[in-house]
Picture 1 (tube, rainbow, N blue to C red):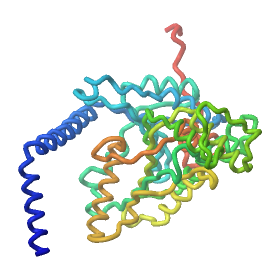
Picture 2 (cartoon, rainbow, N blue to C red):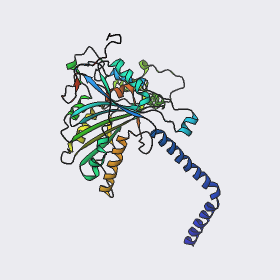
Picture 3 (cartoon, helix red, strand yellow):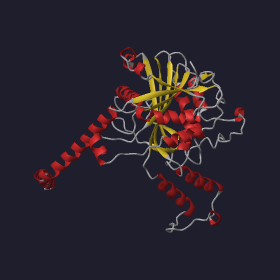
Picture 4 (cartoon, helix red, strand yellow):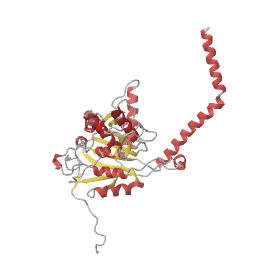
Length: 397
């Protein structure tokens, strides 16, 4: 009897579902049609963007704080999303940029990968704050690794790719250049400690046949992350008590430990600055006989320079080093290709390589990407002796 009842139940259930198909089928069809349309028009919009890769060549002496890079990034904070017809007919997307540092067999280069439409904005900001640098339009260095004669599937190249994310909520700050006292211009250059130096030095160790790429994709965030910071502060300051609407918190009357007070101040300061949706990637590509497995650990160690035990830090995620479960070799090769393609397409915010991004503010971004001063002395970091200047406009012939 039990079996007959179960069979009858499922028979009746599916009869009702099929009978109501005229209600749910059009809705499901419309949903997937909308998804396909949005994917199509966004893909079309992205395919029409004219990109440019700008190489920034650094002078031998440049005793400037990463705070200068923070000013440049603030100018690049473009939140325009377009009106409805732009978004749903043209596929308009918020602008994003890629900040990159690469080592080509030990030779280190700094790049901005940007839409050409924003080239004047970016170049003017860089020259305004770093008048000693030289900026050149460069060929995309990734292209030589996707041509037929360098196809990784033929075993000529081994690839390690990894992405990094925050270990805590976005509102908690990482260790920034201010924590390293790099905002103090009066500090002697030889006394400074630049957290980016570890990564630059690692890149300088690349040998013939080895290449290492570092990519920071950024897009101005519309997220109200100040409210997330406020919730963290409320939780710390009020404990289990609910904050009354409009109530003012007096630090002097609160019983906070030194560590709690430090966290509250750090979070409030962090969310007070402009934020960017962010994706951080590394690629290590080397000839099969030159590939060094230790490099992946070196990258991890370099990223730990930005970690703070009480606040936030980076941890590795989505690495090609770890593929478990069934069909390991096949899935490992597939994952390598997907992550490599995501890098060379500078894709993270939209399909087909959409990632779960996190928010960093301008101070944090200026910490993980800036033009290092002479405190970073690795020979691999090529520096120009002096900046070339144009002759005066009124110079007689």
